[in-house]
Length: 300
Image 1 (cartoon, rainbow, N blue to C red):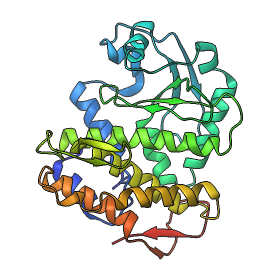
Image 2 (cartoon, rainbow, N blue to C red; image 1 turned 60 degrees about the vertical axis):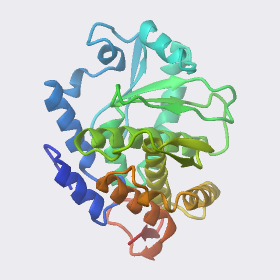
Image 3 (cartoon, rainbow, N blue to C red; image 1 turned 90 degrees about the vertical axis):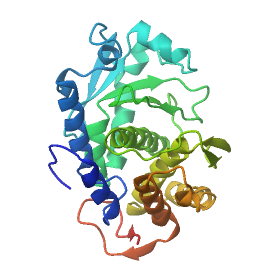
Image 4 (cartoon, rainbow, N blue to C red; image 1 turned 120 degrees about the horizontal axis):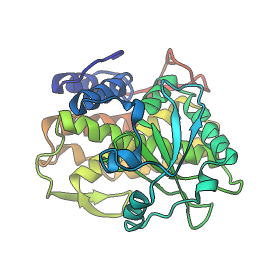
C-alpha cells in the first residue's frame, strides 16, 4: 500500500489480511494524513511541547537529526518544563538539555537509524511516525528505557547510552521501532477498533503479569514487528539470533491469544498474523527493498 491519502477500516482489514510485513508498508503515511485532516493541520509545526498544550508551549531546545531514509526530519526536542514534569510524575527521567541535543547523541541516533534502514520499507514507516525524539536517562547504560504516549502520536521517548555499550545501536534501533509501532497501532485503533472488552485481562510474557488485553495485543504486535525486521537482517549477528529466540519464547506463551472473546474480529486477525509470523516461519526469496543479508522470512 503506497501513497495513501486516507485510511478506512476496510483498508486496515486489507493490509492485515495480505502478505505484507507486519509494519504494513505505506500505511503510516495514510495514518499521518488522517491525523492531519482530522485536526485541520499539518506536521510541519508539530512539537510535543506545543501539542501538549494546544500550541501554547515551546520546546526548550531542538536539534535536527539528518537521516538518510527520512521522508521527514526527525528532531530531538527538549520538552518545555511543564510538559517534562508531567512525565517525570510517571517515573521518567530526562537527560540534561545539553546532553540531549549534543552531537554525540545525534550520532548515536543516526547509528540506530542506519540499522533500521537495512529494511527500507520499515525505515520509511519509522520516519513518518517518529517526528520528535525525547532523550531519557536510564539508571545504567546497560539498561534501556523507552516510552510513547498516544496523546503525542509522533513522539518517542528513549534513553541513549552515554558510554559505549555492546550492541547499543541495535538496542536503540529496537527501542525506536518498538515505540513507533505502538504509535502506529494506536492510530490504527482510532480508525478500526481492535478490542471490544477492555476489562478482560490476559497474561503478558513481556510484563510477566496479567494485563488488559489491549496492552497484550500491543506487545504482541510490536514484538512481532521487531522479530520480522530482525529476520531480514544478518542472522549470524549474535544480537539478532538471541533477540529472535527470546521473542519466539515469549510469543509461544500467548499462542492462543487470538481466540479470546474480548478482541474484535479485526483484533483477532491482527493477533493471528503476528503469532503466525513468529511461530510458523519458512524461508523464501529476498524482498525487493534493502536489507543486510540474503535471507528473508515470510509466513502464512
